[in-house]
Amino acid sequence: MATTITITGAGGQIGYALLFRIAAGELLGRDEKVRLRLLEIPQGLGAAEGAALELQDGAFELLEHVEVTDDAAVGFDGCNLALLVGARPRGPGMERADLLAANAGIFGPQGSAIAENAAADVRVTVVGNPANTNALIAAASADGVPAERFTALTRLDENRARAQLALALDAPVSSIRRLPIWGNHSATQFPDISHATIDGRPVLDALAERIDDVPAWISDTFIPRVAKRGGEIIEVRGSSSVASAANATIEHTRDWVQGTDDWTSAGVVSHGEYGVPEGLVSSFPVRSIDGEWQIVEGLDLDDGARERVDASVAELVEEREAVRALGVL
Ligand code: NAD
Ligand code: LMR
Image 1 (tube, rainbow, N blue to C red):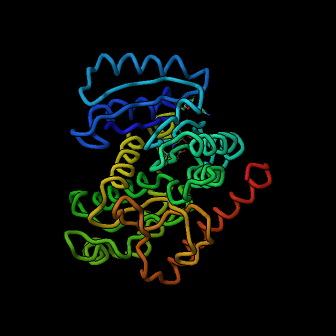
Image 2 (cartoon, rainbow, N blue to C red):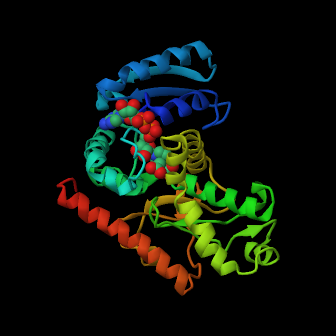
C-alpha cells in the first residue's frame, strides 16, 4: 500500500521545494511508496502540471502516481497526509496576521473537503500563514475529524533557534536539544532556552562561559533574531522562506508519523495545557508517540517565560476573534 499525500499550493515555491524530496523518500523513508495529489487554484495549475512532468522525468521509484487538480474533493480523495501550503505569502513590511483576511477563506472549505474525502487516518500539517489560526479554521470545519489531526508548522522556528544557538556556542547544531517554541508562528513566539541542553548539559551554563549578561543576550539578541527571522529572509531575498520551510514541513510530518526520541515543537490543539485556552492551536514542546503528538507537561515557566507565553497566546485569541468577525468561524 502506498501513502497518499496531498500538497496544496503545489505550483508555488514551497510546493516545488517539497515535491521532489517527498518523491525521493525523504518524508516517509525509502521503503514507502507515495501517491501525490497536487491541489491548486486555476491560476496555479500550469506550474503544478509542469512540476508533475518533472516528477515523471525524475523516474522516482517510490512514486506510484501523481494527480494535478483544482477540485478539492479530488485533491483530498483518500489522502493520508495533507500538507496545506497553498496561501498567499507576506511581502516586505507585512506581519503574518495581515494575511488573515486574504487566507482565512481557504482553510474552512479545505477542512470540509478533508472531512468528506480524506482517509480515516488523515493527518494535516498547515504551513500557509497565519498557520496556527488557519489550522484552527480547518479543524473547526472538518466535522468528524479529531482536532488533534490538524497541526501548524513551528518546526522552522525551532530549527532557526537551534541554528542561532549553535552559532553562538560555536557548536554543531546536532548537539543542541530541547529548545521548544511556544505560542504563535509570529513575532510574538517564545523560543524557550531554559530547558535546552548542549551535549546533555544546560545551554545556560555553556552561554555563561561565553557571554557576560546571558539574560540580556536572550531577550535582546536571541529571541528577536529567531522570532523575526521570517521577516529578515523576506528583506534579504525579496520573498519569504522556501527551502527551509519545506525542510521543516518534512521534518514535522515525518516525526508525527514515525515518532520522536526527544522534544520538538509543533502547533497543536490545546486542551488547556499550561493555561492556553482550549481549542487554540498553539505551539508547545511535544513528543510524537504512536503517531500522535503529546504535549510535554510539567515544565516550569518562570515569570518572564509565563509573560512571553501569555503574550503570544493573547495574539492567538485576537486572531480567533478576527476570523470570527470575518464570519469564517
Ligand atoms: P507561493 O505564492 O509561491 O505559492 C502559493 C501557492 O498556493 C500558489 O501556487 C497559489 O496558486 C496556491 N494557492 C493559493 N490559494 C490556494 C488554494 N485555495 N488552494 C490551493 N492552492 C492555492 O507561496 P509560498 O512561498 O509557497 O508560501 C506558501 C505559504 O506558506 C504562505 O502563506 C507563506 O506565508 C507560508 N509559509 C509558512 C511558513 C511556516 O513556517 N509556517 C514558512 C514559510 C512560508
Ligand atoms: C517564515 O517564517 O519564514 C514564514 O512564515 C514566512 C513569513 O511570512 O515570515
